[in-house]
Amino acid sequence: MFFKKTSKVNKFRNFALILVFLGVFIMYVALLFKNHPILMTILMILGFLSVFLSSFVYLWVGMLSVKTVQVICPNCGRPTKILGRVDLCMFCNEPLTLDPELEGKPFDKKYNRKSYLSAKKNEQRHKG
Ligand SMILES: [Zn+2]
Image (cartoon, rainbow, N blue to C red):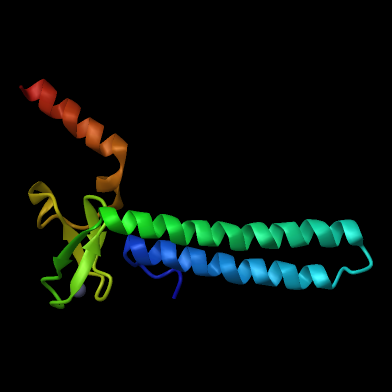
């Protein structure tokens, strides 16, 4: 389920979840190396860092959520959050956009990239 196409907020949450499990797993493995104190310490620190990082990701997602725009998905009718210019519905993965220019175009991650945005800006500059 982690590799399915999903909205960005969901993606970050999944990532944080994986980090928690990874951290706990690494700390568990560390306990198996009781006879190698240095190795055990390194693994413990890695595991702790992983768990620590995941709580940081959760915090970050929480802050990002403030920047998201809540919309009613036209496909499933449920309120979902859009992060960036284009995103997928959290429930049905319907591509959604805030940019009227991109409406109706096939979903593409490149619309979120800065290079695409600046390239478009240059294009407009040359036209005008
Ligand atoms: Zn939807």
